[in-house]
Length: 160
Image (cartoon, rainbow, N blue to C red; front, side, top):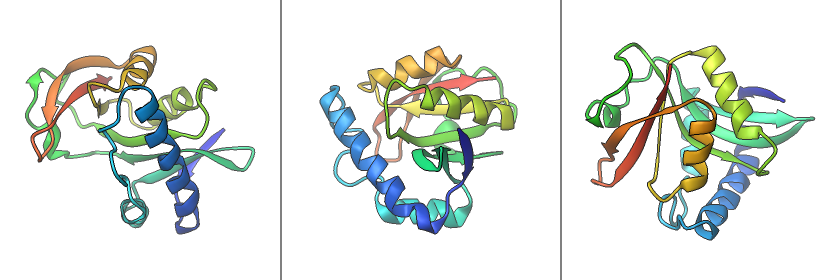
């Protein structure tokens, strides 16, 4: 597997992975985290143009997509009910989704992100139990709760 920056030609493949992820989350007790049409094609295009959208390929097939920002300054992470493991510069991972479950794709993506920037922050919905398990398996530690601009909470994790 390899990870590379996403290209505009990858928008449809990424969108299909997000559609599949929304269905997976709904089936697994998490119908609201990415309810509706989020992430939309416009979100994907914006990430690509900003240079923070990535894809994971396996034998030429796009099998995952995610937002990865090195030296992030995520306003949501400035205030936490809990405590981050450190205050050092970090990379943020958002909107990670895989095409196939149970094949180690998300573990590969997390490991590659950590190799590139060994201080990572990520958050997930309280109902996203599969992702919480993936995060703990990958060595992330639960740090507390952060709040999105709309006031909804997310469980925050860090690996350093």
